[in-house]
Image (cartoon, rainbow, N blue to C red; front, side, top):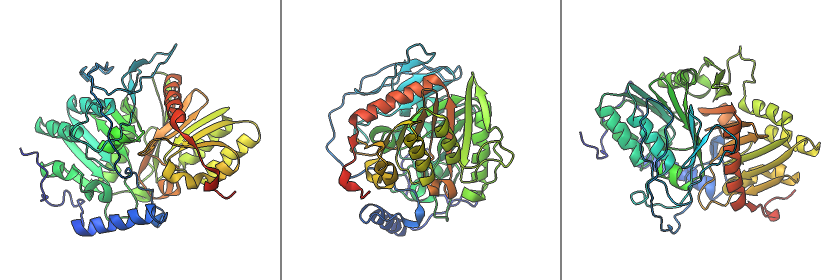
Length: 437
């Protein structure tokens, strides 16, 4: 089978594959991007665009091979190359084992990106997160379902093509604008080779998930778009978890989208809102449908985050964007009462939205990455972490398709605190003249 990207498609898959003319699509996307970045207009209350700014000079990077241990019995151990500067977590006294890019907890692998800020997609390889996802795909035995906002990673695309060739059943759900119409997307290439694809067209909101379900047992999720920018230029986190109950949650969400039920039209049928895996409590949230009516937990993930803020002594957050004033108000109130030590890092291009916290005197910095700080992370004390695709915005809550996990695990929290420390060290104070308080 050819692997060259074709300009022709085999047509709609299952009645859901919808595209618009390439020129028209690019014009529409161009208008949205110009409005967002040149005029600071957030069109239609959608999420801010997540691609990187204009290219900068690329540093010289030498890729050195490293072997990363793999805790899962069905996934073979393979060499994972890494680049200089790749973070390696240290978990003193914990059960997790440091690996290139993150930690190995036996039933999970957690990865953080180490941006090298390059547009050369052929020269630079070896992201531990990208290699781990490729490894998981290469060891799939029966099925792979993936919901991805964007995809242009050559390594992941090739791994999916290899899986397809050996008979693995693969299905893809994606965003129509940024998954199908992006000129660099490899999704159409996969569809051309016979892998079925469905998009969320023609709606305006985003299918913003970035998750894979492998063999009904493994879940890959986090903030990392399956792109060169996601793996090599942006600050992101990803986790691979072995849990059949968690896979059931993500499978239910995938099946809804596969049936054409996106955003608020998706039913609230989360099978396992709260699970325990190897002693770790995991809470699962999908938006914008909220939690099941019978759930004891708030229907809005931000409500749950607000609960955790009220009971925490310390809060650290890394956020591409925060526009939810109710969440910011809770943070401000708890800090003003002397009950909360809070520090936060926001993506420089989205700093205008955190004026309430800045004007309240909270310790907020703008990120130091020349590209994008793409994290969507809250860390409570040294025990609990919330992260996923979910931006802390109204459109994430009310319009998009998103996911967020809350994990109660000291090793995982410590790894995120170390990532926060790395980002804090390179972050900068927000200039006082940015806001009129």
